[in-house]
Length: 115
Length: 109
Image 1 (cartoon, rainbow over the protein chains, first blue to last red):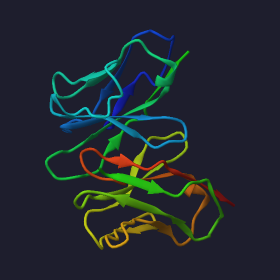
Image 2 (cartoon, rainbow over the protein chains, first blue to last red):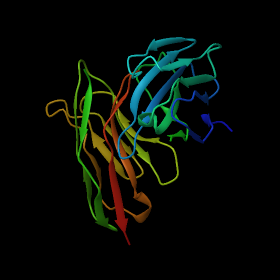
Image 3 (cartoon, helix red, strand yellow):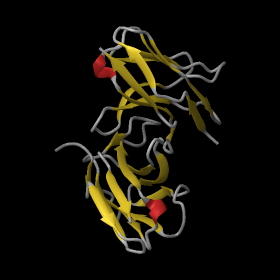
């Protein structure tokens, strides 16, 4: 498909475990974003990549959260020592860059449940 | 920093009623403003946008005007349909796009 793809769509894990969430952006989009959405809330910014580098990671809540995009395409959000409060839907979005603020194209999200 | 405040929901309307969802923003500079929509079971998608003051964004019968003097970007539709039932998010643009909390709209037949 031509849209943003996120896997897994659902992940249930136990407190203290390590989790990886994957995002495959739209081909040709150089900008990639991770957001977190809790129930009844709007998406909360986590991190933004321009190419391979993290241009802004100010939204990552603590050092248990880390994200990479080694080849400037697929990105992985990594969460260590998960806590129950990490339960949320993790959204990935991509966009063209270099044209000013523009439309974000979202995936359907990865729902993380920490028991 | 940039922020967005939008009216709380849920909003329940009958079909063909007029819709307004209020949104105000704070910003350094003059950001683009957006409305995104999330239909049941689907991902977030752009509904409309405006890139500068006095611009009007429109799509699918929805409109919003970028008002610098009142720092607002209210969403309006003259006649809602059942298929408009969704959650609507106002967003303050930039590479670090900031979203409001969302307003859930229910439209009854």
